[in-house]
Amino acid sequence: MATILTVDDSPSMRQMIRMTLEPAGHSVIEAGDGAQGLAKAQASRPDMVITDLNMPVMNGLDLIRALRKQPTLTGLPIVFLTTESSDGVKQEAKSAGATGWITKPFVPAQLIAVVGKLVRS
Image (tube, rainbow, N blue to C red; front, side):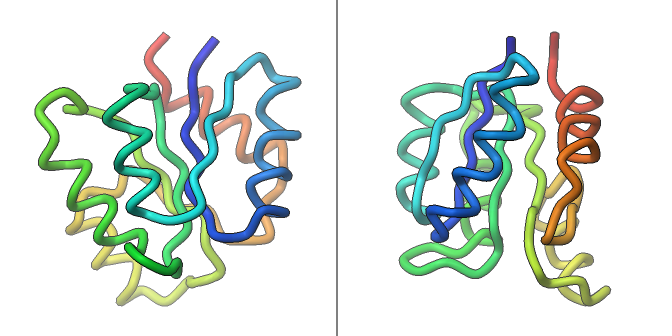
């Protein structure tokens, strides 16, 4: 079972991710913004992070950059789950260190498949 950290300022989106991943056997930790996400990632060392882009306090790009600077989180898969789909934003995310990209609204089976592909077993 993998531990997935989901970072999104929308409680309903975090709940949808939890309701998708927990029945698939994963444990889900939630954070409401990038700063909370960074703190929870450092404390819990999750197997994967799924983050939104547009959030208060610290956005998803800044979160990814901060996570990539953490020696204890080297190789951590980080996937954007966002309504943004422009190539420019995707390129910026890739440069920041994002592993993948899923556009909202997500298809539950797609999310489960992406987690299955990226998580260390």
